[in-house]
Image (cartoon, rainbow, N blue to C red; front, side):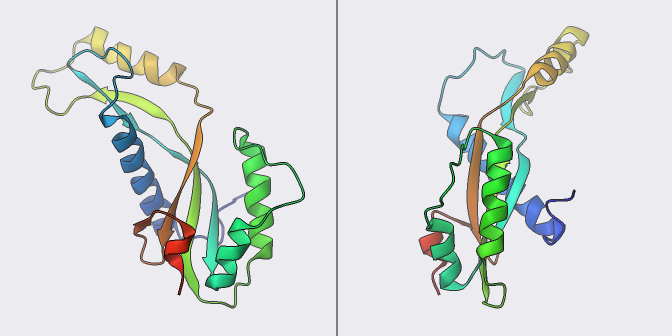
Length: 158
């Protein structure tokens, strides 16, 4: 099943680009791992679900309490929750923006400022880390209809 069948690929790609920037900004000033000088952490977010926000009523829908438990550490729960929100949206109202939920995946890549080519060992380190990296950290971003990052759904008010 394609969860994004009604969402233009441009929206997903722009959202993922913004999510990657958010991930990198979150980790840019933190000492997370002892990385060699040839490596850098970057984001490789995986989209999970999108909720288009329609009209000021849609903002209220996105903030409403639900009568079921939502576990934001479980992908299936997030998908169920966003499907529910999507059924509550009045698609006849003007589109204000989107909420994009994604899996927050960190990967290692060659640091672009490292001038030397990577050795076979260094390349294998990247492959090993990235293939063993299983993330269960989920997050979301909110973008307006122009696909610009906003801090909250309140920023979408007409």
